[in-house]
Length: 71
Image 1 (tube, rainbow, N blue to C red):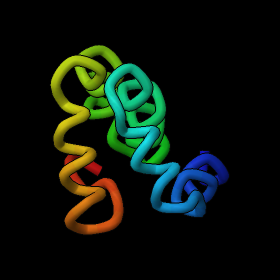
Image 2 (image 1 turned 45 degrees about the horizontal axis):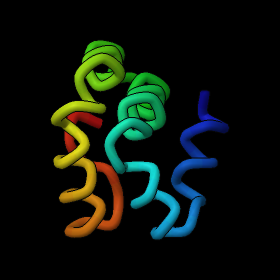
Image 3 (image 1 turned 30 degrees about the horizontal axis):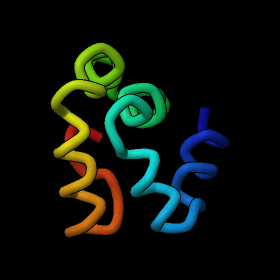
Image 4 (image 1 turned 135 degrees about the vertical axis):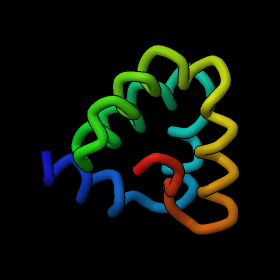
Protein backbone atom coordinates (compact mmCIF):
# COMPACT_ATOMS: atom_id res chain seq x y z
CA UNK A 1 0.00 0.00 0.00
CA UNK A 2 2.94 2.35 0.51
CA UNK A 3 3.61 2.11 -3.22
CA UNK A 4 0.09 3.43 -3.91
CA UNK A 5 0.65 6.38 -1.58
CA UNK A 6 3.99 7.16 -3.25
CA UNK A 7 2.37 6.85 -6.67
CA UNK A 8 -0.43 9.30 -5.83
CA UNK A 9 1.96 11.70 -4.07
CA UNK A 10 4.31 11.60 -7.07
CA UNK A 11 1.68 12.57 -9.63
CA UNK A 12 1.73 16.09 -11.07
CA UNK A 13 -0.56 18.56 -9.33
CA UNK A 14 -3.02 18.84 -12.22
CA UNK A 15 -3.51 15.05 -12.32
CA UNK A 16 -4.14 14.94 -8.55
CA UNK A 17 -6.65 17.74 -9.01
CA UNK A 18 -8.44 15.87 -11.81
CA UNK A 19 -8.57 12.76 -9.61
CA UNK A 20 -10.39 14.83 -6.98
CA UNK A 21 -13.37 15.48 -9.26
CA UNK A 22 -16.69 13.83 -8.38
CA UNK A 23 -17.02 10.19 -9.31
CA UNK A 24 -13.29 9.50 -9.27
CA UNK A 25 -12.44 11.05 -5.91
CA UNK A 26 -14.31 8.53 -3.79
CA UNK A 27 -12.33 5.58 -5.08
CA UNK A 28 -8.90 7.13 -5.62
CA UNK A 29 -8.64 9.11 -2.41
CA UNK A 30 -10.72 6.60 -0.42
CA UNK A 31 -8.09 3.95 -1.14
CA UNK A 32 -5.40 6.58 -0.49
CA UNK A 33 -6.81 7.17 3.00
CA UNK A 34 -6.97 3.42 3.69
CA UNK A 35 -3.35 3.09 2.54
CA UNK A 36 -2.34 5.91 4.89
CA UNK A 37 -3.91 4.00 7.81
CA UNK A 38 -7.28 5.74 8.10
CA UNK A 39 -9.55 2.74 7.51
CA UNK A 40 -12.85 4.26 8.65
CA UNK A 41 -12.24 7.56 6.83
CA UNK A 42 -11.28 5.65 3.69
CA UNK A 43 -14.41 3.51 3.74
CA UNK A 44 -16.61 6.55 4.33
CA UNK A 45 -14.84 8.37 1.48
CA UNK A 46 -15.45 5.47 -0.90
CA UNK A 47 -19.20 5.48 -0.21
CA UNK A 48 -19.85 9.21 0.33
CA UNK A 49 -16.86 10.97 -1.23
CA UNK A 50 -18.22 10.90 -4.76
CA UNK A 51 -21.30 12.85 -3.67
CA UNK A 52 -20.11 15.54 -1.25
CA UNK A 53 -16.65 15.06 0.20
CA UNK A 54 -14.80 15.65 -3.07
CA UNK A 55 -15.18 19.37 -2.36
CA UNK A 56 -12.90 19.01 0.69
CA UNK A 57 -10.24 17.26 -1.40
CA UNK A 58 -10.27 19.95 -4.09
CA UNK A 59 -10.11 22.66 -1.41
CA UNK A 60 -7.16 21.01 0.33
CA UNK A 61 -5.34 20.44 -2.97
CA UNK A 62 -5.75 24.07 -3.94
CA UNK A 63 -4.71 25.45 -0.55
CA UNK A 64 -2.11 22.96 0.72
CA UNK A 65 -1.08 21.16 -2.47
CA UNK A 66 -2.05 17.76 -1.06
CA UNK A 67 -5.03 15.96 0.45
CA UNK A 68 -5.15 16.89 4.13
CA UNK A 69 -8.65 16.15 5.46
CA UNK A 70 -8.89 12.88 7.45
CA UNK A 71 -5.53 11.57 6.22
